[in-house]
Image (cartoon, rainbow, N blue to C red):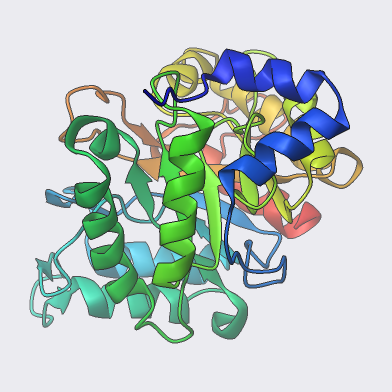
Length: 324
């Protein structure tokens, strides 16, 4: 009976030396994976997190599509991190200002790209949870990935990067290797596994990564980043305070302290070798596991402090203009 290699065993194999690592990678047989190019990872240096649509529909009930587009025109991002989550209905009518024609989800995604700093080089990538694989199997996971790919690849320019969340201890390197082969064959050109880096995966499975930040100190997980660099094949590292639990700890700090940490993370990008993922808005999810909502436009620093009463949105806009 064939037994899958566990995470602990795989780490031990890698630690055993280059020959053992090479042997296990060869055992998995990646097949044809794309060479590392600018199509394999996000292209720009101004990364924002702004979740807009998931499987349930529009997730920003207090805002309209026009308001979201206006933020993109204001912030001029180059990368929209996990802009949507899961399979979405491209024909879904989204909330628009009174008197204006409603946008479909597909039209909204295109308008979002068009509103960014340089639409021809903007990267927008969706989120797909690995829980779908764990609960329903590879067929359901790949069917969802195909549906998302059909939407994102039809945008101009085509968007072909995928971020896979919740890759956790219930998974194995073999799961990721088999799925990555299918996803690359499907047409996806770059993959991110997990929220804090999947440093135990063989080269060729992931092409960009999100690295976690300690929410109360702003410390970047350079250890995981170095592990990923040692494996190779990663073209982009995006540092983030993950949702929901770490971000809720960050939100428990005073607005001025949050602004200080955001400033430190922005300043450290060049020397640290990462791009910081500025958290703009993430609403409470219909998924009951995520009950924490975040809206930087509604969190204000002290009037008498060095940020002069600015919202965290305004603070982050200034940081982007200075450091990105």
